[in-house]
Image 1 (cartoon, rainbow, N blue to C red):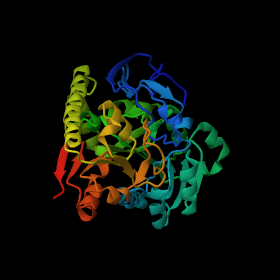
Image 2 (cartoon, one colour):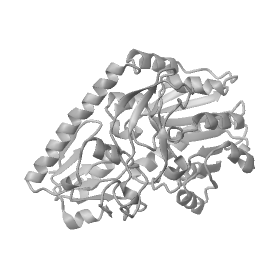
Image 3 (cartoon, rainbow, N blue to C red):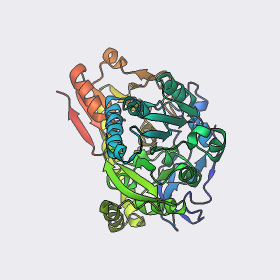
Image 4 (spheres, rainbow, N blue to C red):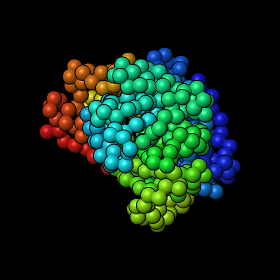
Length: 417
């Protein structure tokens, strides 16, 4: 069991003034998939707290990240949608910044590079790349593809022991990584130290505004420690001589934000969309406790709809298969009071998850091929952010399925006939 403790100060400003805004109850770790029942039985409190000083929203407890991420089953290259997005990202960033480089190719460094999927696309563009990641199995996969990857967290110690990290980088990337760390300030300080005047830093994360507006409560889980929006992260970046010059909103994971960052003394023009988005955040009053109360009510309403649908399936003796065990599964399943009794079994197309236990349950994750043997009437899509891939698969190959349930961002029941 990983050790945890109550958070005593804000990740970004070190204030000790917090208020709980969302309590989702105890849940197991979302991505710590294991094979034995005892290790699978540990549940941890899942609360969101808001810093009363800077407004940053974060988990109310601290879990040892080395325990969480040392054996991490998530793979960037899982799913056609994900690969297309990464390929397009590499192409877009290359096209945007290659003209600003003194070289004919970009030097690209990715923090939290996982299995090297994104860097592999940069390599196809003849870029020089380096990745760093704490999950050994993911690092080994990246290296097998020829992606130079350091096995480590990005820390001050890493900068001392790996000289290659201090290369002259055109581009530094962090995709859905910064939100997973308790050491955000140390990471930003380290990145600032290896950035030159011309280096562009690109950070992606699930955007708090999308989580708030679209009721994406299941993107709140223990591995996802921070829930960023512009005002607090801008102030944190400023501490280390960094500034945001552009932002992009996009649909990944239900709604994400991409920050483009340079050194504060860089004279690059700041896109007006940055100030427009900050104004929008203020307009919807993201720090309002009343608004977060409405967010909690929306979770309760969704719970009623989903549980009623699953109970109806039980009465009709319909077999229901849970499709996908993503990180968001744990929060969706336990915060909504679901039971294993509602499901015939659970499947995933990630080979690193198949054969492991569903978080908190005595249920083995099965390969997707089991659907053809069981022929269920209903598919419940826990990995709703890949719903297009799943729907295409079901419609083309699983004509025995009657219904596809999509829980978020809008509760849908799709007739497969």
